[in-house]
Length: 436
Image (cartoon, rainbow, N blue to C red):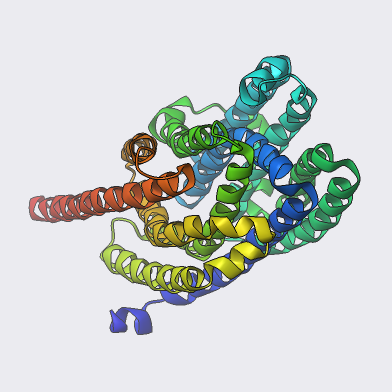
């Protein structure tokens, strides 16, 4: 392993990508964490819980459509296939992502009153749901652009774009939430998605060599690529957010549910801060994994990256566990009760970080449908465990424990699957050599 680190040309590229990806994630996750604290203090626990509930509903579709198709685009850019084929595949993914976003946004707008009645037991929030549909549309288009830039390993460009958006978003959110309360917070979310799209579109048009080289007149739809890769990722991206959304509904349904949801979500935001560095590293590793899949260096690269993610996530989780009460107190004195949730989620963050990286490995190996199975397994498991543990613990503790147990079980299953997949690929390679 030490020889691999010292001699491999992959390591400097990995360090460079990781550095800029990490900075980009620090800026984006850090500013969202800051905004969460600001909104919690301005709105209070009850209104902040309502905002969290609405945001989790619309971000369910952002994760499923935008991030999934962005990941698919990133993979195909780094894949060694003919250029005309690559252009067709990426054009198809971009078009389908846009159309799905448009359809979903239209449905949300048309049925806003029914959705408001189901989520909040009134129709007073319907206008907020109508506003939020623009977030779904613009945010999903933004993620496809991110996929192009990350596929070309333009992580520095992504960082600059995110830094500009972060500064503007903080100013807009504070102003609107202070003067217009919950409605202002929702409007700021929509403006955030518009700023992301406009700024990243500018950078993509100016720095993407791939996008500039596309001939629009020669593009064709490549529907088989959707079946074999994009749609599995779409369904996979829907499984976990859908489970989390269901858990939010579960928490909100209890006595003073929106307050309890605000406490849990604040702890979950810190959980997201813990895993953001491992996720940034996984994003930086992903194009390189795609490049070296099927080679002798792939297993060593996976092992090295796995150990890096494990070390960083364990260190960060330990710090958060030790200072959980102080961290939750930042949101306000009422939020300290959520420190128990944070301590449990800090343990879950280690396994979540490793699973993020292992998921990238599975996708790199071309097993997109297997990745879907894993996410469906986790989504069903965490919901069932939460319902079961509610008999013994309060709702926040029950859901937090369900996260830990489900992540541990999925980690075990996914790791065994990857080891078997790598062994099978190695045997296939040796058989081909013997035949030749």
